[in-house]
Length: 489
Ligand code: BG6
Image (tube, rainbow, N blue to C red):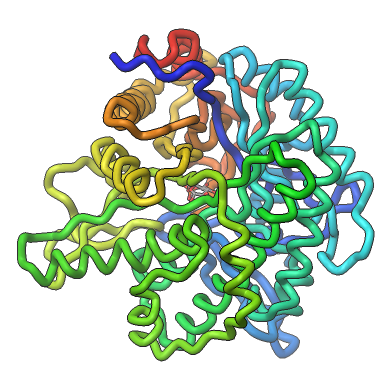
């Protein structure tokens, strides 16, 4: 069994809107996720808003802004799972203590932009919001747990999103940089690792891979949105290094592996193009500081014309990231042929791979895909890498006050073995944070019943339960894995 390198950062990951709750406490403003209802696989999650004075709902993908002209609204007759989530806002000490008991070296969390700048438009930050995260970071420090902080994880301030039409305007860049710079100054000495945007590439995945059928105008909007986010990210990286040269700033990509559905050269080419659009496009800009050669082809395919200035291109060059990080859950198969056996489910689409097993949500379990992704990405960028999300969303059964989640242990064991192989093959892998190390609200469906955690939280899809925390079998297993540097699996 591979011994992971000394100092390897073992841990877990969550995001503010999926764990914190306290959505209107401590001076916090509303974010885009605060107007998202619960959903399920069959019935999608909705964004709620008013348009032309009328109550409206439309299916929501993570990270999506409101339709143009809409005003985000909370309706009394809807249930919003993020409003309480698992109430990390009031339970963070208890939760961090449990992470420490497992031996976590790192905890990936995100900051809710609206706790720091409630609308995003204020000149001065909200002190209560700053104080909350300071307390969280100090608590982590007590246990020698390194925070890994995502600056923006699917929860733009609602006011900004309405004003700038979900990153459809340059005004977002300044608002983001003001927010990021505030964090870099405020938490100097407490935080070392930062990620600029969670899964930045979902803007493209959402239009095609996740069963989407984007129109040219959607591609126009999302490629433009991405450009503004790239500039914002690059400016933030540069500011971070000026504020503290020890800061390590990464990008974060939704890492999906694509396979050709057959040896038909047309499928092989389609597969290459899927990697380019969905994975390399964002990674290249953020790691190499320039648009890839194939960008022009991608834009031409959908008649996209972008507002890109010379100064933007200069800033992209000056703000390349220090490390590449990504989430990994599954692979997808793409084909030009008719698909008989289709994969359904949020975040998953395309043809079913006969060599793989699928989760209840239609996600393919593919540890070899993780090795493939790691080796591909390291070869392309030669930057330190971290796997900052990985895990199995499953329905857990509570029995005698615990959960016997051998299926989760199996999934994680196989993925850790795959990481070990990539390390043996030379990949500079620095850390691993499993997704939803404590049960939390699903980003894709808003369900609590899609659980990933080592720690069970007593709360259901209707918002009922005591919020009590209970370690699962996987809790004790992961503790052993960390203590043995990944050798005792
Ligand atoms: C990633 C996101 O896409 O996948 C997380 O960064 C999300 O926010 C995770 O929770 C798992 O997806 P889901 O839909 O099962 O919550």
